[in-house]
Length: 219
Image (cartoon, rainbow, N blue to C red; front, side, top):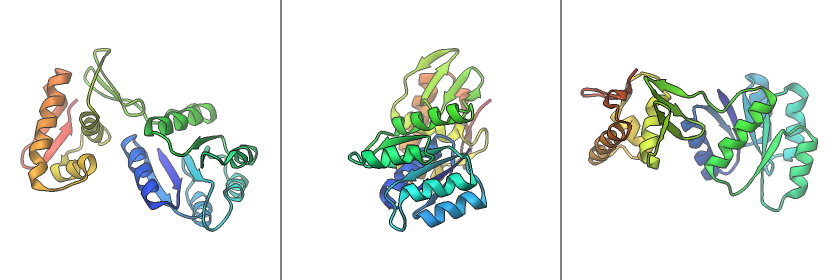
């Protein structure tokens, strides 16, 4: 699924883009209202996350402009005290809103709810490998129907493989995505987490080693 993220704060936007990517979205990040309108006209996304405090134009106007050309679900992102912006956003085409600061889990839950209400879709499909089911939206893993508790980095590692659905993911790519580094000294950390996930799942075949390259999700 494609998400258009409209956020001029580079730090917050980067964190949101990473979270959305982990949840299975292909993210396009723009930093202005003009770019948002152009992006929607160019290629309609599945959902828009719209910051209501943009530098070049009022978020309400952007929301209204999107509604003139598209019925794409819009999640308005507002400041804690911006009650009027939230109400105006809803009256001018937004489907829901989320208030800064927020947790990733709340962001994904609200996107999921908006998509279900507007299109009958969820944030991302569960990825299945044998009797292991990886729910990217809920950040939950079940084995033969029983939920398994994974630590944050353990789930992030499994999710990174699940989103590629069987393609080999290089070690450096996994290190960069999950730990934010490509330092060779961190490879032992990666290997340790692979071993932990295999052990907790009780299904060592779920993470397959591609010798000299990286890992992939088994079937």
